[in-house]
Amino acid sequence: MQMETYPDQEAFCQSPAYQQWLGQWRQPDHAQVDLWLDHDQHMEAMIPRRLHLTRCTTRLPFYFLDSMEIGPERCVDLGCGHNWFRQFYPTLWGVDPHHEHYRDEELTPAWYKSNWGQWPRVYSNSALHFCDQSEISNQIAKAMGLLTSGGRAWVGLNRHITQMFTADYQEDLLRSQLAALPGLTRMVWLDRPTNACMDGNVWLWLES
Image (cartoon, rainbow, N blue to C red; front, top):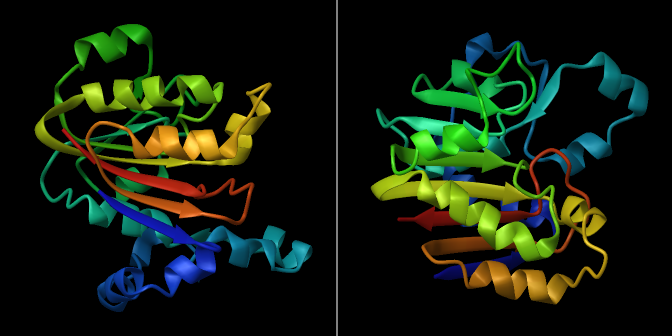
């Protein structure tokens, strides 16, 4: 398992892996984005009025999705929210318990049962962390249970949200819990920002 720690998102975006990807990535023409940023720390540095008057987003999710090598494989986006990425990845299918007008399908306990072991790819960015830290491993195990044999998953978490749901939050314990996940092949831990609401501060690559 590959474990990587970076002081912040900017340090990760200067890494050879990200820079190599960025060198061949082409921003989608039909995205209707005025300003592309590598990560949400860049967004935080913008003058507030400019931020609210500019259609801007980050490149990191495209790196995450491309790193899964989706290709023609069907990929479910757990907790898709606005379901924005489906327009760029035709095989992406957005499921969410909310956001009825954007999701492709409602995410329910029954959905998990009927989709168990059915997906070659699973993607979930900042959606599985709304729980006590003792439940994080179970949340990710449910996502892994959706994979077909040999499938791949990517999960991003924002530790700040989990801390809000945890009475006795212990960051070192959370890190060790995540590092012990079955099927984990790569883990990126960012020391900052502690609250990364756009793209998270813990990134997990897993295989079934």
